Length: 339
Image (tube, rainbow, N blue to C red; front, side, top):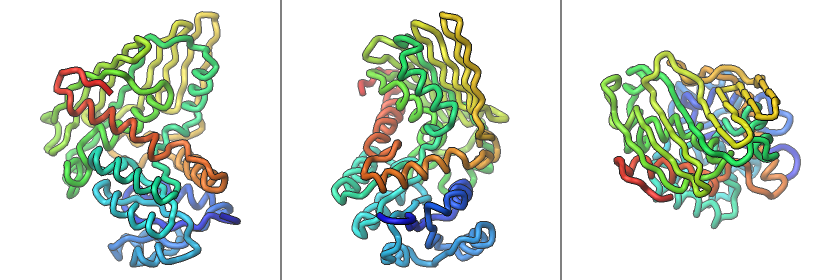
């Protein structure tokens, strides 16, 4: 690839807003050539809001030699087939989470991309929050010491109207509920920071708060190979919605990542209070109520990965790990599951 990265967008639903904002901020590096939706109204609204070119066929994207990569923002149950088309056309893929609706389809999707030699990045933008990057640096320097406990909490609010949208929270379209749709962000960040637990014991339920097929409440206990213990909670019943939290307790101190804020207290007297420059969370009734800063950093990393011939920070193969964790929680039913 030389010059700007040529990009096509597939899917112009709710998730397109932060991506469009990020792409406009990156227009000196990325040329958005086409944006596709099968719905004329969505195409018109997208073009009017963002001033980016739209098309009424995916073929226009896959057949255009100027397009180096596609940004896929369609429902999860369409991902495998679209990645197959992109692989056949030799286009790199930046894919909205989750990979797909099942482990089998997710594994097949990653295998297709690897066999075709295309770059596959996944939109798990919490990895790129400034506070999360500060915590990653702290861990890599060993300043917390050996970890003894970790907890990850996803306490969101979604009104019933959110799940009244066709397909929302269903196994067929979304692959499940809160774990695969919302908590995946915090769980992926946890894994990317400290690794995959060895054993998981979980419970899931659909509460009286929502009428839906998938789970809106989940809890799990974790044991890591080094002996550290942990816990996971996730819900979309927590009105009015609260920021994602990851708490780490180590031999040398503790760290709490609360949305865009990081608080660290070390035994040697060091205190760190870091406030990220990104704003909003999307944890309440407006799922898109957050800035596009992390999306911009993620898309820039994806473009750099293609230019440098390396894998992106959140690659398809790496993201399979959080899918295995979520599948274990769903499977457990109170019995330990080894990962």
